[in-house]
Structure formats: structure tokens, C-alpha cells
Amino acid sequence: MPIVYFKRFNGSSNPGIVKSFSRELLDRIITKEKFVLEKEIPLKVHFGEKGNVTYLKSENYDGIIDYLEERNIKSFFIETTVLYGGQRYKKELHLKTARENGFTRIPVVVADGEYGESFTEIEINKKHFERCKIGKEFSNYSQLIVLSHFKGHMLAGFGGALKQLSMGHASKGGKLAMHLGIKPRIKSRKCEQCGLCKNNCAHDAITIGEKSYIDHSICVGCGACVAICPNKAVTVFSIKGICRAAFGNKFTEKIAEYAYAGQKGKKNIYLNFLMNITRGCDCEGRKMKLIMDDIGILASADPVAIDKASYDLTRKAGKKFRGHSIFSYSEQIGLGSADYILKEI
Image 1 (tube, rainbow, N blue to C red):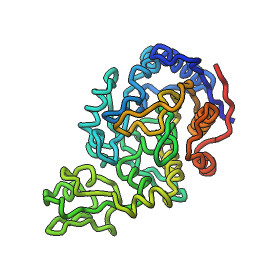
Image 2: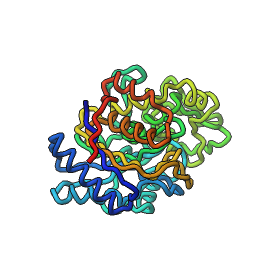
Image 3: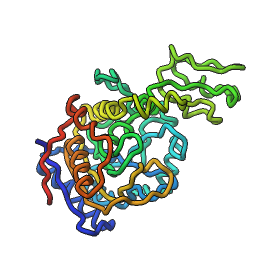
Image 4: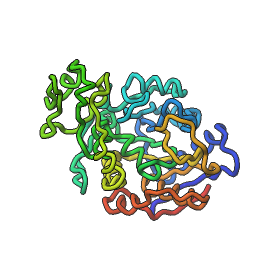
């Protein structure tokens, strides 16, 4: 069984403690699991949406960055653009958000291009997806340190390492495929016929005119048109799509399959931070109440095991999140193990 290493806060989770604990855990897992570190390792993080105050602040990662710098290993923060509105839907504003939220110590890379249109297709041949659209920049690296804020999520139930590997790695088209499983459409009343979407469609699926439309027989659902439209005339939202996402979409299974694609062929290290735990996701641009005390930090080489351990620890502390079915499906597709050994340090 995979080992999950755990450092408990015991009442204090100030930045100095977090820095010390995360560094110790990183060193422990590298030593015990005999990791060989690459010369350049991206740090997969979440910058928090504008208006959110409970995302993990950048200083919480200082111990990890120190550890890498002492070994002459280059690193940078890496993220992808989001599907919805807000300030992270395109590269320029995403970088602005990162700066405003304090992520300035090392460079920041947006992995899926200016508008979420840049991706590599990873072949997985699973139940829902044969191929997954993963941000193109990820393909340049064989190892990441995935740093996850464990908390709730409206659709998935909870978010941790598996969500970082799936939604956090997917291009806009991949996010679209997981969330809704439908293709975008053009609202003619909002379309000003500027042609940006058509000019940026790699498959020539868009017709612009008095009644602009997208040919779904050609469209591959990459999401570039959604991101680039300045008038928000291209949308993926509909009553049908929302109902599918909420009720019949097998959402957690799709997350598991994209997580499989995100880690395929990589020698990743995972750290989960059980602190600032809220019901909602860091993608929500609003202030949210904490629902439990801070618990600690975990580290593992197995993304399923670390999320299951995080889930079990929060459940023991009094909060049972939805979405636990992802663990059995993740095991089924060979992503990792929900059985683990917890070693408290």
C-alpha cells in the first residue's frame, strides 16, 4: 500500500509552521520513496480567484522553493486558464491575478496558452474519454510537485490532488468536456460579427453572419471561441448542460480520467494542505467561512491515496464531503490506491 506522510498542526498553522512542515515532508518523501529530482520542476498551484481570501497564500510554498533552490533546481508556478468568467479566463488577466495575490517569488507559467486554446492530447482510452486535452506546457516536464488546497467543491464534492491533475491540468476544451459534455453555441443577439472566434477556430467550424453559428459536426469542443469572444456571445451554458453536469454527467468519473491523463508518464510528488477549509472552491471569487480547524499537511507519491487520507481526516474532524465515489473509480482505471498507510511524523 502507498504511504501518506502526515504532519499535524496541533493548533498552529502560521506561515512559519507551514514552511517548516512542508519542507520536512518534501524531504521525507523524496528520501523514503527514493525520488530522483529533475533539474527543473514546475509547482502546480492555484492562485485563487479575485475576491477569494481563503486560497493558499504564496508564502506557504516558501519552504518547498527553498528546498529546490538549495539543490539548484529551477522551479516556477504553473496553472491553466478557467472556463468561466472571472479574472483568470485568459493569460494576461491570470498573470495579473497571480501578481495581485502575491505569487511573485518565482516565474508564473500559464500552461494552455493565451485563451486556453493550447493543448496536447493524451491518449488514455477509458470509459468517457479516449483522449484528454491537457495544457500544452505540461508535456515539457516529466515531474511536477502538485500542491493542493483540500476543501469542498460544489460539483465534485471536494477538491484536492485529483482535481489539480484534472481541472488544473486541462485546457478549456478539457474543462468543457468534464463539466458539461456539450459544445458551445453563439448567441446571435450578442454577436457583433467581429470574426475573432472564426479566425481562432482551428477546425473552421464557425460561420459568422446575420445568424452566426457553430457547426457541431465539425467542432471538437476546444473552448477557444468561448475564451476569445469579447462580447460573451459564445457560451457553453444552457439548461440542458447544467442539468447534465449536475445530475447525469458522471462528473467525478470524468475528473478521475482527466487526472489519469494529467499524471500519465510523470514522476510526481503530491502535497495536500488541510487548512483554510471551506465548503466552496478557491475558484469562487467571494469570502467564505471556514468550516473546521486546520488539520495539517500530507505528502505522497499516490494522488488517490493522498486525497483519500485527506478525505478521511476531514471526516474524522466532523465534515463528510460528497464525491467519495471517485476513489473506487480511480482504483478501477489504475490511477492509484484508496488503501494507504498513514505515517504521522
